[in-house]
View 1 (cartoon, rainbow, N blue to C red):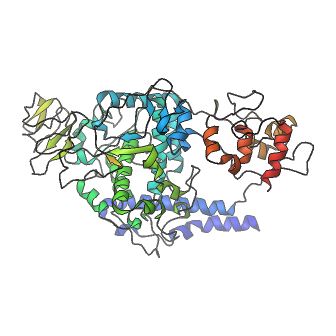
View 2 (cartoon, helix red, strand yellow):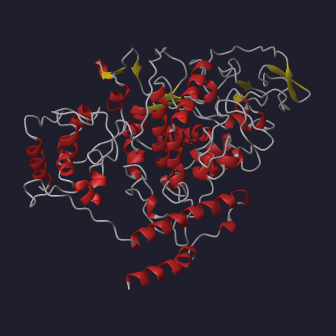
Length: 598
């Protein structure tokens, strides 16, 4: 009977899913394809949720305590596998950099310098040295396989989860970017994930001629769209292709100052964490001005790998673009919400408006947090901040060799420099061409004679206010470029592969059970919760004896109260920090098993 119900359910599933969807034919023509895409993501997610609900969940039983089979520990809710990517402050992150917490709460690195909150800059505002170190770090992550592992996270949830087509789009990508930035900083702690302000390119006669699409930055393409030079040339894709692909300007459009102002004009959280794939009966109308829609148009404009979510993260420009999306999101939060509201305001859970993967307290797959946790102030309190978007005045330039200040319309604003032979119509009297001059509407070799003062590179004079027509600096979070010089910390290298140190048991009884031959006899439990003892992975302290800490962050976890909250895992992996020494392995197993049942 159960099988028959499942067959009937699968047969009727398409009818159920398509019966109530919004008709995208009524959407603006330029957004119609995106509307259908968001709808399909929502349909996929609802299908997966329904299928999961019809499947029985596996049941796990822990073996009994040796010599006392009447007592067995509680089964952990889930396997705990902490990594630097889970961190939300420098105290948590510091041990992974082999640092130590010094006076004033600073993380002091082994060979000097401190690990500070990252400052995300517009990529053209980075110094040449800083930008080249960033590209080398990304290349190192690519060569180690960590870049692909992170990108595959996005691919796995790209078309059927809470990552797209609904309210958790922005929180999900905020958490994802935090993890990518940590990976970059594990290679070079002085770095941060930059943002790509595509408004700077939107002013150009042809944004494809931006300096961004040259070997100095993201690289240029051959006639088939393959990226053939620059720092990301020969980046093999997750699908096995030898090059990243782009189709610049074939469809879609970049962010504009007007589109940003439209977003900042919104006053309710439902217009920001928007329902972008509502069904019939949703009390909130389709919001085609939502940030998720605007961001998707930039994906379409870049094209190639960036067009479908399942391949978008192949291209590092994906991360720079989403860093700017997160900046927009944070500026809206700082403008329209107080500190309390920023962490608590989430659109209501309405099944007709979004699938349950987007509900506030749904698990943010594949991360071990809830969607609403992605609104935490801790991200920008402790992990990163944003440098101001590039600005200029009638007297001062943008502070970058790769931007120029356009003043011909009376409102000074920064614009991307144009590559050699690129179109510069309308900018004949401005310093628009990189290492060139605008002649007859095209950038040709030459030297432009400027009459304005060049601001120091990576700095904007603090005495000069931002132009009223453009977004200004936000106090506290959005920091002005420049300021005190921070010593560059010593670089580090790191590999998160489970084959090294990231291999733990979840219970102090695991080694005793393994000795009693439970690994082959209770595979369901042992393969999930006793990976190290059963040999599913290896730890760099695999055979060490005595009372010690297996995890590098045990002191931090103890300070967070985890010795009590996560007693089984801590007893196995943080025995020294939790003070559970001077007892036998069997006594520790028995005592923790009893306490887990209380």
